[in-house]
Image (tube, rainbow, N blue to C red; front, side):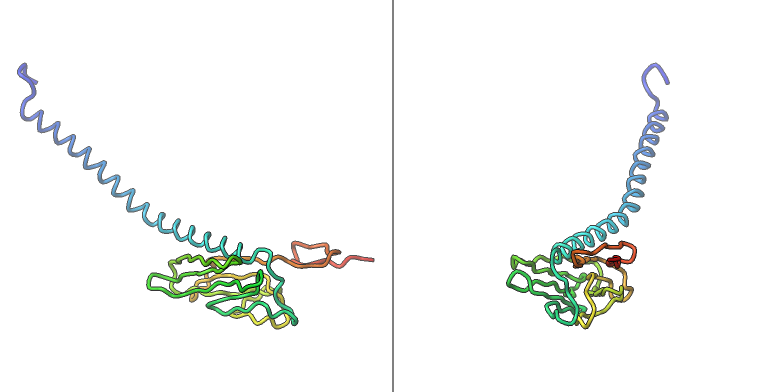
Length: 185
């Protein structure tokens, strides 16, 4: 450094160091945003699934039991389900849209709500008291224990709503078996 200030070479060196520092920060921000995008997409998918899961849970909360030979109040197909509730009909349906499936749920109050999903081929599945999954529900002899929404081709679970278990007053429920234990008189 001379007595008159910085030389041209010193000024250019300082500008180069500043440019490299700013360029490095820009590159770091770009690298972080590239890594953050897939995490954001995965989070959004999980949030959508959780919202549909909660809505389906609320729809079926306190309803049932469905199934058995005498009960024909619940009907379900891969694309829709409906049941009698509060003097009306409650239900849900899955419609295919251009950007993915849309789940529409109609509750007790008659209000419909829609939840978009990223997957193209979503469908309902019905779980009976033996744990078997069915693509439609006719109530032929067994009880409905859960309703699931799964991705069509893979069978990947998107949402699951369990129905309340309806047992007699003397029931000693066994969580391992999933039903009442016999009690000795």
